[in-house]
Length: 464
Image (cartoon, rainbow, N blue to C red; front, side, top):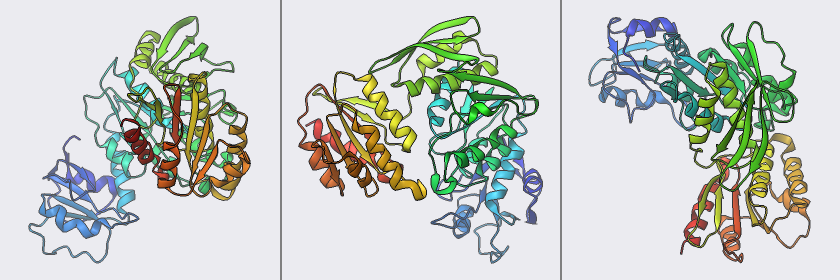
């Protein structure tokens, strides 16, 4: 982050200046008293499990020069080791976003891309970063820093050296995309797809669409909107003010398409087509759904003026994110696929199809946990998963959780289906499967199921 004056912070968040020097130079922003550095500002954020106001003294003791707070009970002359500058605001979370918006607007020469969608956000982001880095230094948000806390903190990493910045925005509540996209005001906005995500809040894909499409309205005037023409919801978007629309698709007509798709265990080969140009791409990822992720990134890059040759190079050199179809081959030749970052009905089906397509002659074993945050229709979605799996050529189906018992019911009395209520029971069952070098195991489930731990324990067992 670039150094700023305290008066800029006061102005941006419309806070009440309690004490301090308005001309003070501040070195950064932090919400964590454990990692704060000398000269930074500390925002006392109220979380689900903690209240940042309880740690203001610790932050000041470690060198925070400014504290932004909202708690009425805080006394300006509390027994701090030194007296920091103090700014009071009605809501520190809103203030954090407002300052991020102010800070982002200092970098109008940096081309910013905003990405949201039900599936593929992170992989699309990583592919696009790989492409853009061929042309200039590129910033992106890391890990799960895509919410109302993480995205502002990521924006604060902007400095003048960056020519591009790619930020994914996640949501679990109505209005979050509005807030996050208002902070970003991106030059390019893209929604990867509309699926069955966070249905506890959004109820249906229609609700997801209503929330996600707000991103396009906050793209800069005369900016670029990227539309998935194969998505039944997104293809209805044909005009967004004066913004240019760039489309991508595999099955429908679009500006950017993929043809001659060939699926292999360690890569996907396809022709990327734009106008009269066509290039063969060797992508280090599994599944047709990753071709969509590549096309999404390519459409954004074309909107930013990147050549198809550089797009090809970026796709071919990108490194797939952790826990997204991450593949390990054990010393005995068993293929273990860690796709445990998250799960919803759309991504679950995509992953299973990708494994079946990539390993058509192997013995496929599914290790699946509950899909969470699906609302009132959770039982129904898990039952439908069973019907989807039912006619597939699968060696074993290993189910773990409470709601996924509906998948077991849907699959009936098939001998290769095992339902487990505990991790120990699941691991014991997996250890009993007769495996060889033709065996493939796919591990997938929602984040709260911690299926990555099951993956690690089974990997350790397989390596013995």
